Image (cartoon, rainbow, N blue to C red; front, side):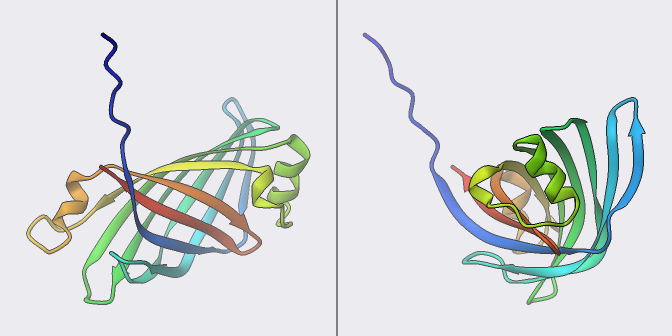
Length: 157
């Protein structure tokens, strides 16, 4: 008898629209092209989280090949009730080399041409109403825009 495992279920939590300022290019390193995008603000909105992205953090980017980017973004959300959430997001973005190059130049690329998935870890005060975030796995789907990134965040259950 073959046992078929139960697939995880995804529940939509929120969309995070992150605004970034001009990207700082480090250059070609032993790990590939390195860039840093300072995070300057934005919004979070959805059925479980509402608020804003603080001007605190950055997206550290590594391009080991022309068609692949590894992203590590760390920033803070401030919710409408004043609670703060630390976001530590790890992502992979891959597309045709010319599309990634256009994105690096700030041009719009149709999101359907880009694979952009992430694993955001959300940390909250463990004595507050958002303590459940500390004990939950999240995944997300991203889109790069000219002035920032949009991440749709889902809880895995």
